[in-house]
Image (cartoon, rainbow, N blue to C red; front, side, top):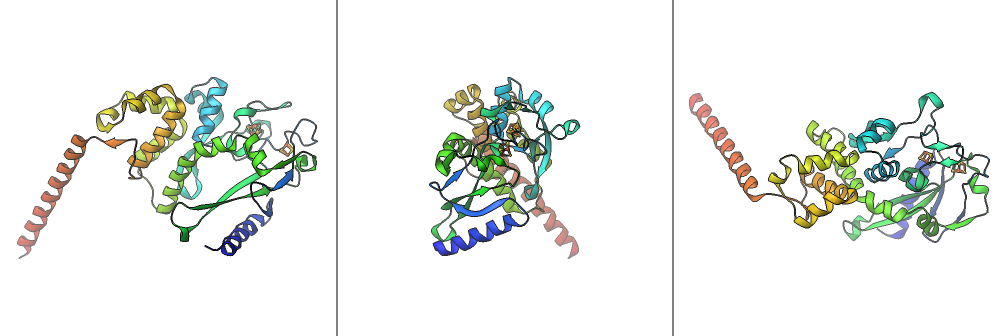
Length: 302
Ligand code: SF4
Ligand code: SF4
């Protein structure tokens, strides 16, 4: 796709985002500059931490529950509620705002965000949005990234003199690590989206998706205390990593979902050959039975 066409597409996206909204229609790259600061001295400090629709990514939950010293069960019970995510119709967790306290975030205090260094990705990138365009003509996987400013009129942070580039802002917000951790999960959402809204996953698959997306302790029990390891081949190195580290377990979970729910190949996990042979045998037997039944019906009709 020529750069002119990419720009046309970008402008269309930005224009769409502009309809009664807050996106400044300026395409930015990593060197683009802007002024912004958020600190207790700004008159709107903490005003925006209420009535937010914050979808928690799996990495957000791992960081937050570890920060608070909670199990995933306790974290979900106290701070989250399940929700079906738009067009993907996949269950995800949303941060529960305090309805009886004017919809404020449970982590906001007069001094600011109580979980600042582990706050969710959605709070983290503001005021810079990231979008990407797939460059179909260059081949699958080639993507053009661009950034844009989310400039809300009530946000006084833009009146502060502190100057950033998109790159320095992203560095300050740990954006690269969050992008890396969320990429595979986002790809699962896109996979489901590509099936179309009308294609609903079976209940078991939806439950698996929610467990892997929200609850590492439950997923660990599922791997080590069920028949999981009798069905799948997992290398000893991977086993050691996922036993010791929540993030490794989360990434393994994405591979498992990709393979078991979306039927894609995985380098990390595969079904055991004897189980595969058994399943193939079963399918063949069932097919043979069906063919015999059809034959009998046809003969009977004659
Ligand atoms: S998590 Fe922190 S930054 Fe995000 S809305 Fe809550 S208080 Fe504000
Ligand atoms: S509105 Fe802007 S400056 Fe004010 S607290 Fe929110 S992010 Fe910070």
